[in-house]
Amino acid sequence: MQSTYQLIKCTLHLADNALILSQRNSEWCGHGPVLEQDIAITNISLDLLGQAKNFYAYAAALYNGFSDDEKNATDHLIPRPWKNYGRELNEDDLAFLRDENQYLNFLMPELPRGDWAFTILRQFFFSAWQYDLYTNLIKSPDATIAAIADKSLKEVTYHLRWSSEWVIRLGDGTDESHARMQNAVDDLWMYTGEMFEPFIDEALAPDSDTKLLQQSWVNRVKNIFDEANLGMPVSGWMQTGGTSGRHTEHLGYILAEMQYIQRTFPNATW
Amino acid sequence: MNKTTQHTPDPALVKQQIWKILEEVNDPEVPVLSVIDLGIVRDVVFNDYQYEVVITPTYSGCPAMDIISMNIRLKLMEYGYKDVKVKQVLSPAWTTDWMSEAGKEKLKAFGIAPPNPKQQVCSTALFADESVQCPRCSSYNTTRISEFGSTACKSLYRCENCKEPFDYFKCH
Ligand SMILES: [Zn+2]
Image (cartoon, rainbow over all chains, first blue to last red; front, side, top):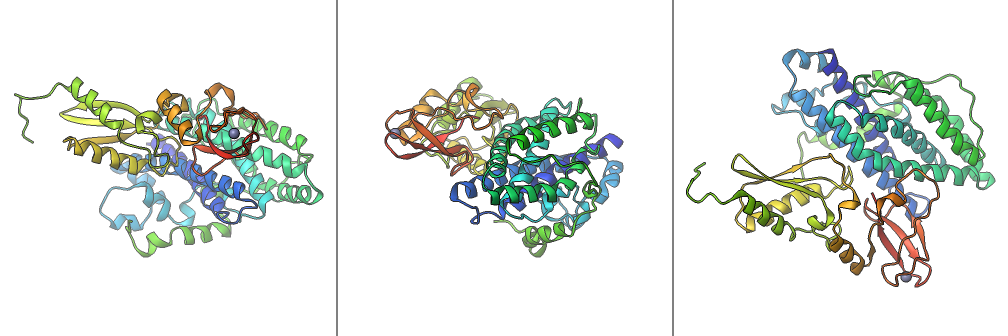
C-alpha cells in the first residue's frame, strides 16, 4: 500500500509541476517580445500541458483501480467536489478541483511570470531538471511512467535547447539584458534547491540519486552561465514546501483563474 | 450482440481493408497528410469480435488527437464498420522516421519542408543550424527564424535564395 501511495503522489507531483508552469507560461500569449518567441513560449506551454494531462490521466486510473484501503490512504490528495459526482475520477478533476494545499509542485513554477529574462531562466532551470529526471524515468519499472517520460523527453530536449540559447543571448547581450538576466538569477536561485530534495520514489526512478541529479544539473547550468557571462551564485538559503503542499501566495491566484469554470459550472463540457 | 458464424469475414482481410480506408483520414492540422502518411496509426487489431485502431500522438499536447479519433470512427462508419474502437498509446514514442516517403513528398508539394532524418539534430547541442532545404526553390541556403511554429510539429524558416518564409516539419 505504501508503494501505491508513493506512486500516485509522485505522478501528481510530476503532473502539477508541468501544469503550473504551463499555465504561467501561457500568460505570455499575445505578450511575447516578438511574434516568434510568443509562439515559442506558448508551444512550450502546450507541450507541458500535454505532459500534465498524461500524468493526471495515469493518476486517475491508478486511483480508480485502488482498493478501499488504498483509497483511504490517498484521500487527502483527492478533490472534494468530485466526491459528489458519482462517477470515476478523471484527469480534469485532478487539475480543476484540487485545492492549493493538495498541489505538490515546486514553488518555482508558480512564481509570477516576471519579465522575459525571468521567464527564460525559470524555463531553463526547469527543463534542465526535467531532462535528467525523464532520462531516468524512461528506465522506470512502471511502464506508463516510462512511456510518458519517453514521449516527453523529446519535447523537453527542444525546451532545454531553446531556453539555453536565450539565457546565453540575454546574458551575453546588452548591458540591459545582462542586468535583467542577473536579476533573474538572484531572484530564482533560492527556488532551485527544492528540485533536489528526495521526493521521487526510488522504486519509480532507478539510478536517480538526487545528489547525482543535482550534480548533473549544476554542471549544465554552469556551462551555460559561463557562455552567458553570468556568475554561478554561491549556495545559500533555499525555499521549500511545495511538495508537501505549502505554497507561496501566488498559487492560489493561478488556481482561482484556472479553475474558475469548473468550480462555477461543475462538470461543464464543450 | 448477435454473432452469425456463417459469414464471419476473415479478420486479416478486414484489417487490410481498414488500413486502406485510414488513408482517407487526414490530419486536421496538416490536411495534406493522412494519418497513415503521418505514421501515427500503429496497429489495427481484432479482439473479441471488435476491431481496434491503435494510434499514438505526435506531441504530448497534440490538441488534434480527439478529433483524429473521431474522424477515424466516422470514416470507418461510412464503410460500414460501426463498432470500431480507437485506442491511444504513448509508447513507443512517435518519431518523424515513421512518416511515409509519400507523405514527405506531399508535404514538399504543399510548401512545407519535410523532416530530415533524425540523427541530424535531435540533441541538446546549441545553436546547431540544421540544413533544411527550401520546399520552393530547393536551395539549402536557409535560416531558422524560430524553433517553434504555427503547430507543435513545425518550426519557421526563411529561404535566403528565393526570400520566401516556409514551415519545416521538424524532426522528432
Ligand atoms: Zn527558396
